Amino acid sequence: TLMPAEWLVANPSAQSDTNLGISLLFCDWNGNGFSACPSTAVSYGGSANFDTAAAVVSGNKLIIPFKTPYSRDPVCKFQFSDTSAHPYVHSLNSEEDKLHVYLYDVQKTSGSDMNYINVNWSAVSSDISAICLGSMPVPTAD
Image 1 (cartoon, rainbow, N blue to C red):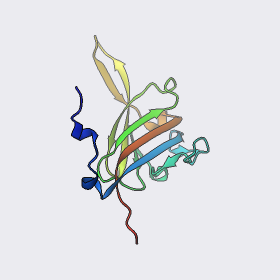
Image 2: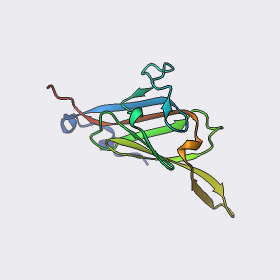
Image 3: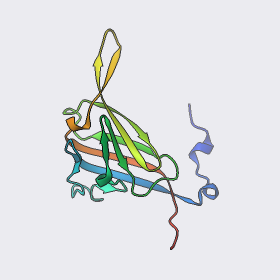
Image 4: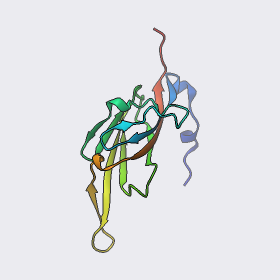
């Protein structure tokens, strides 16, 4: 099914108070926090609009704040650089001011049933990349 045309065409007059914003992340997670961030491996220094120093872990949830919040919840993509070393699955929840990443291990039970088990972020050591896109307020002159 194709999306209606009004979903695909931006309405500039209705969005004059917002810009398209992007947040980028490519940093090493060492089990306790981000390291090698900023990174020289990418042109944007490893983190654009993600506040990696303010990241918080609570069990299987990693919360990474945005330096500049979005006007609405952004659309995000997240991945580990070495998926063979970390066969975990994750789910995302983005808010205007932060990205939540939940980490799970999947174990097959009887038949085709799956059991999702929370995995603590302390068990992970890998490069992580993320990208978020969404509306951001237009900066105002002071």
